[in-house]
Amino acid sequence: MRKWHWFFEKTASRDYEEDDLPSTRPEVFWDVLKNQYRVLLGISLLLFLFALPFLGVHLYLDLQKAVTYQAFTAGSLAEDAYQDQIDMLNRLFLITIPIGAMIFSIGLAGAARIFKRLCFLQPVFFFDDFKKGIKENTWYFMGMAFLSSAIFSIFAWIRTLDSSNFIYSILLALSLVIVYPAFLFFIPVASLYQTKFLTAVGISFRIYVRSFLPFLPFLLGFVAPLGVEFIPDVAIKYIVLCLALVLVGPLLTLAFFLFSYWRFDKYINKERYPELVDRGVHRKKSH
Image 1 (cartoon, helix red, strand yellow):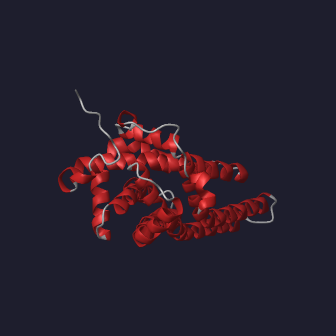
Image 2 (image 1 turned 90 degrees about the vertical axis):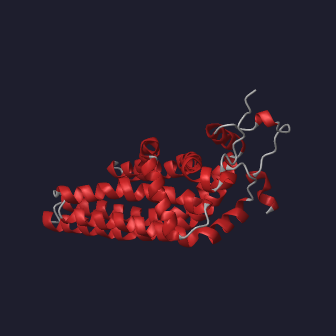
Image 3 (image 1 turned 120 degrees about the vertical axis):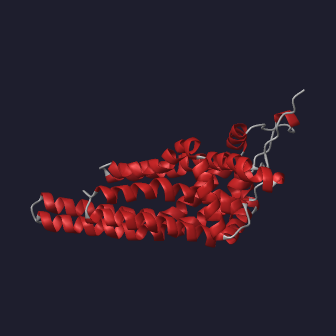
């Protein structure tokens, strides 16, 4: 562990005084970004490793689509056969989504504990906390990842049967604006509260409903990576996707954790867990 000391810890040039401590959650965000950026980089790289299986399969399927399209434009593949192969590849991709989500959720379970400690301004012992997070949260995270991604894949599969059917498109949109956000809130909920799986799911839905409008920027941020599907060049598509995952992903997740804790304080902690209210935030006393 000593050889990683330089990478994950940073020594302050002077001792912190009480007035230096962040007094709002936006200040916590900038404090973590300034003093723990190497931890954030470490999280992003580890999460990228857990995303590689899904990215690899996705890349393979995209290359197969490109080969199929070349055969079609060269005239060696009839239009009906071309469309059948593209549909098959799209459906194969939908099957891989729940599997890839479950694998990624293992890394997310470990990262969630680190994000929680960063938001609470607690010391992070990177690999120890990552392993503890996996041990504590993996089954919950894998269950919710499979549930939410399977619902999306099923609705998307149904839509491929008749893309002109308005009802099918509505079902797919609902999975993105209802099920997916609940999964996002489930991450900080399950990593903070010791509760049953279904209870955590229920809390996630209730917090989402009460936080819909202020949550919208986060929803747009987390859905934005889907936009790479409209990039025709495969190389550019995956360069943009990888950069977004490594550089933007941890910052957006940190901000979302802080936002979630603000909502938890308002709707849960204030009455049930007062010891968690403003954890990591040192409100300045008014004189």
